Length: 497
Image 1 (spheres, helix red, strand yellow):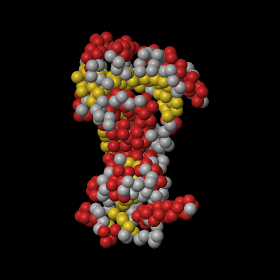
Image 2 (tube, helix red, strand yellow):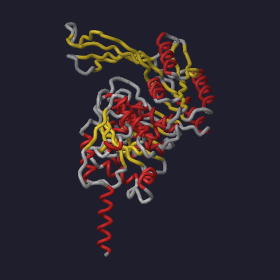
Image 3 (tube, helix red, strand yellow):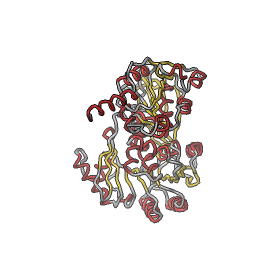
Image 4 (cartoon, helix red, strand yellow):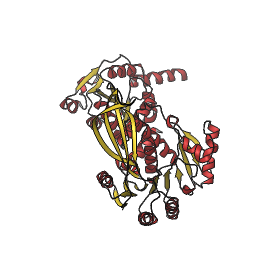
């Protein structure tokens, strides 16, 4: 599963999405909260720094741009300083902003979060102040937005509706977008508001409510698995959706599909630093994968990964494709899936190098793994923190050892090596020598058996020229694959006599 998801992320390309929703500015005021005011029982925040970020639908835009998507934005901001600031951030992110309508007399929404740190501990929000107008946008603005969206549907691979209930996604506009997109066969994905009436989302492709939103909109508790299935099924049917994804925090997500059995999509436990922005991140990744033609199951799995990475950061921050791939590679390694393509291996090794770990490399056919191999890998693994094993492909083994080899296929050999604790990563190579792959890996230590002293170690010059070293491992007498094959043949001949 992990290799499939990694390959999916690596070949995403640049999906084209339209994002419609409520833009706002998130302002953060950071400071030290180390005493109580003598005027009232409240904390005194001594301001240390301030920063502003895109919020609401702007957070989704930031996410998608960080993930490499081509994004067009459709929204409303005021003709005020905050509106100009929001437009500047959108353009800096690389989003297309011609679909943003500027309205006089309607202030742009600002959320100011006061964040305090006491005794140098993890910062915590102590207060949030909202400045906003939540009345529905006028009909003229609806018409202008709809005209721009209809014009863009010919190029969009998906439309994402990011609803914060600030007046942009009116029932009339939302339904018009869904109907127009349906006619063009463009999927519409909705991050909904917390409300009891979801009628305006009827006919959308997919809805992503959280646990509480699902309970409110369906009128059912979701405390138990069966209740969750009933609630999701009710929304799926009554709103004529193709799918619904109920996000469940640490429990992952529940995916219900029209005409098919629903399923839980679990996620691994995370150290939660700040859960702000996790929902935006999940819908961003789900929309990205759907736009790229991926399956909904894969989209939700990757959404879980990205949402998990987001909660490990403070505040609303983006996640890159490289971070997602790195997390998947780590999961694959923990699950015992150690076989990598060279491209993915280099991504993982970059993470190890950044942590100051020593990379060790060795290579061979490893056709029949025996006690001598186990001792060799233990020796190699002791030379550093990360051991990479290059394994000759079936084709290269035949070229080196003849038509009767390998006895075990490359997949079988890789699986046996993956079971060894000393081995961290495995990479196949098709050449008769490992020179190319050694140059790509750039190991700090290259390990070969003592029998290579006279023959000359392939890759020595490359490794040593970049500051690495070559180590020759002692051999166990009488243990080799060739000798093992001879023993088996002799035993078979005696048994047949």
